[in-house]
Figure 1 (tube, helix red, strand yellow):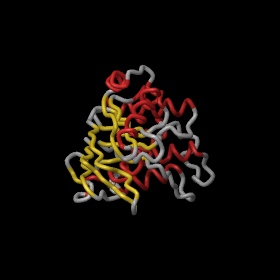
Figure 2 (cartoon, rainbow, N blue to C red):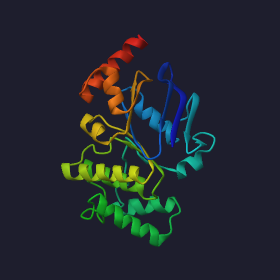
Figure 3 (spheres, rainbow, N blue to C red):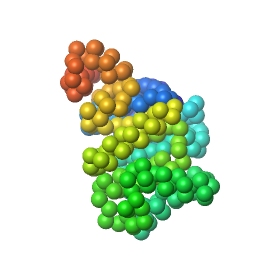
Figure 4 (cartoon, rainbow, N blue to C red):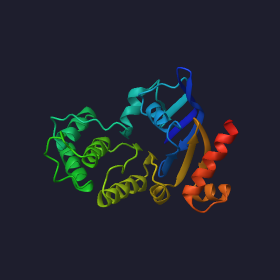
Length: 244
């Protein structure tokens, strides 16, 4: 389970997060959505221990992301907004490297790599160096290395950005399978049909504050809208008026 408790974060005079709180539960897919600059990526970076909150706590399975950083890192898999790869390594070598960092036994690791290559439709690029990979190919490698150790909690920032229809469908199926295994999924996306198709709960963030939190149907009722895109626009507008 992922918990964000009254988290505040500033960069100089700019307050990126102001008292953000929400919970992403096991066995659910939680969508963290909001306009550009709302604070989504900052929240994720605090959760995966790259940034420290100024106030409040980020907690993974009961472990504090600041005080118990290594315990948290063992329990998470992350697809960050920056997909950077080592250009001289093949796709398979990238995933193997991350598996070894997590202490996986060789036979288990190699079987897991083969499984991910198939799930993410990577067989044709598995043994190619990643230099010159397309945006979609780079994303697949980043996904595979995030999932190689089968973490209980996974965080995805735009997980289908740059993928074709077939690969996007495969990624969505993979995300659902992670949820169905009882694990916790938190992801950011700007694609409202994808959010609607995947999410059990949605957290809307605007101006560094949580302005809505609930199931898709609950948010529809509160906003008085049926279309999720209209729900999002209305909720963000209401949140901005409250801040102003």
